Image (cartoon, rainbow, N blue to C red; front, side, top):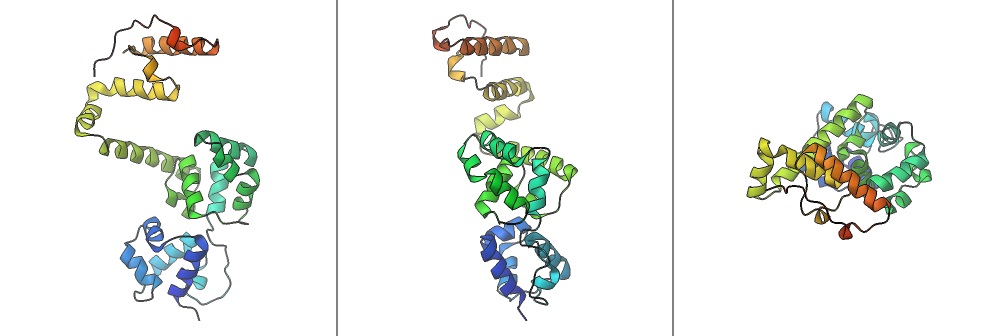
Length: 245
């Protein structure tokens, strides 16, 4: 009868995961998980269930009681692919991945045929590919290793956005950190986000509006100029008051 460590080593190889990476996804200490993998630490039943669910195998298979799986490895990934896809076709999802990740190469990696095969459990995505899919879906990587519904997806996306915002603040310099945390500067931060979302090059706007109405007028004017094929660098008249930061 196969030992748990032997099963884990095989599942890790098949999934293309390092022990450290699997431990982090499972929310365990690396030393604890390595103990299970190397058979010098025994897991209680709750931990075994968590690990079995993570890899999408039965508890009997994980503990070596049976030789055949009742479910394929990465059992929840296929369900979550279709959950994220929603009403889109696989082709639409493939194209959307390239757009959201700002690189058409990702659409070539995640072709409609590839996405459908993953959703059917016919192929296993590599760990690196799951990372890209998580970025696309706006969720953490561990989302793919548990059973979810539409409400779980909504909550996971909100948590992901919050985590990213905190990470951005933590990586700012002390001066910028203080600026971002000041409630009086919230309007400037919103304005900067809108410039980015509308693909407006801030370098073209030496003096930008500090009110929502003025900003929208400026954005519309910029789009109008661009759509008519006029070089914005040759257009003067942006004479609004500059923001002092």
